[in-house]
Image (cartoon, rainbow, N blue to C red; front, side):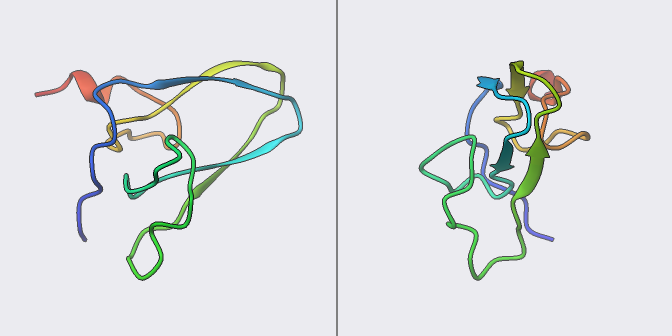
Length: 79
């Protein structure tokens, strides 16, 4: 499996709205980070759906190494 492109050195803070579906970029190629813009087409990557259960701020992974996609788990701090 190919490793995704690291899109950022930290998470993307996003205000999400309850009941809204978001599609997180798993490949790191999207120009609309942290969300998918279709740049993964032709690759082994697929976007990850996130449905907000409440309106709040969440932190989407920017390094693409999280063990809990699509949310940040601090993996960007690992060497």
